[in-house]
Amino acid sequence: MPRKVDHEQRRRRIAEAVWTIVALRGLEAVSLRDIAAEAGVSLGQVQHYFRTKEQVLRYAGQRLVELAGEELRRSLAARPEPPSPRSTIRAIAEQTVPATPERRLGAAVWYAFVTRAVTAPELAALIREAWAGTHALITDEVRAAQRARQVATGLDPAELAATLQTVVDGLVPQVLVGYRTPAEALAVVDRHLDLVFRPAGRPTARLGGEAPR
Amino acid sequence: MPRKVDHEQRRRRIAEAVWTIVALRGLEAVSLRDIAAEAGVSLGQVQHYFRTKEQVLRYAGQRLVELAGEELRRSLAARPEPPSPRSTIRAIAEQTVPATPERRLGAAVWYAFVTRAVTAPELAALIREAWAGTHALITDEVRAAQRARQVATGLDPAELAATLQTVVDGLVPQVLVGYRTPAEALAVVDRHLDLVFRPAGRPTARLGGEAPR
DNA sequence: CAGGTAGCAATACAAACGTATGGTTCAGCA
DNA sequence: TGCTGAACCATACGTTTGTATTGCTACCTG
Image (tube, rainbow over all chains, first blue to last red):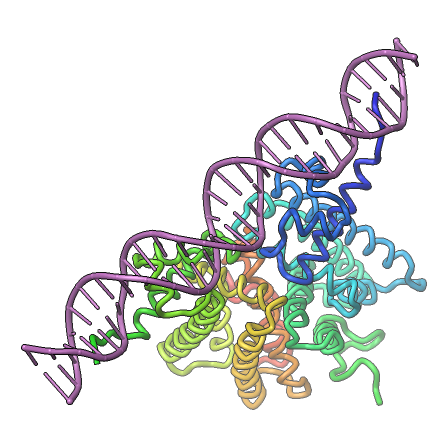
């Protein structure tokens, strides 16, 4: 057998190059030559690891979902104890809303893939699975909050989670096109959480900001 | 002067061709030749009315916003009297969530343009203005609802409207990629409206579906 | 009725694209 | 030590792309 290289490492480098170009110039602007140049390899090498352009993009999308999932799990695990359901949901929002340059890159790429999935069915499944995963995660937190009497028990947790997730996801494009700052977007999330969560120990909702001045 | 034609009519026909292609195959798949073929005109004619491809796309985007605005105003005016704030917001949601094939087309095109705006600043302004317009509209309705004691007066109407708008907009891609049906999406809106609006005449929120069975 | 110009259509063109092909190099087992 | 096949690289090919160019046609104006 001839020389061995780490296939996965090569592929990941190419995927990262795809992300950079997509975030900077959009998904429609990526060419295999640009990808190769950005990754610092030859066009031939890209072709060696992916048979078609579509496969490159698909892998880049899958890897993005994979990486985002890992990072979410990591940041959730790294929170101060004990993690309340509300703070967990808030942490998900913080990870989704693009506040830092790296997150902006990830969000822009994710968003571009969602758009492509509208007319590219082979990507749609990937997107749907990712959404379903996040939804399940949030639903669990809502249920925990209900058990802790922090959320009204009469409300359907799956439905509440759906709205929560939709708000967070819906804020992403608003930040990406400069309609809102990341801070404003997170404020929208907080006000919505105020609506859903009742303040600890009190029977009715307290209105207004999260920190009284 | 030589023969006169209606410039606006020609441009609109071309814009409609753009929409069709975008909704069917994505924004990255539109070429001037495809546009010409779809519009049933020659490539030369497209070039006669638009100097560059970018101008074609920009016009198609502007026209889409324009048309969506007109249709929204029309459908809001055509509702049974008297229109409650909640029903107005619900009508906006119905117009945004792609339930019919035509609306799906419009939503897919809109969504594609938003995505392009992430990396194309000249489109971003258009998108932001459209968002701001809708937000102002919803905010007015929330304020009216507060005056009518249908929404708690302690809440910031602009913030409530922002969440409402974000939920509705956030549902669009979910429907477009087949994660939710249009009916499910509207149900999410209704449950959120249940949270924000208190039932007529009662002091506390009634939970569950909008129509008791 | 003359003619100038708006309204096209046809074609040309260079660039960029995805993909295919052929060759070179060299690690690793026999 | 030789040789086989994985890992490339370079280049070529045919298409498609946006845009430029050229020229014809027919209508409105003077």
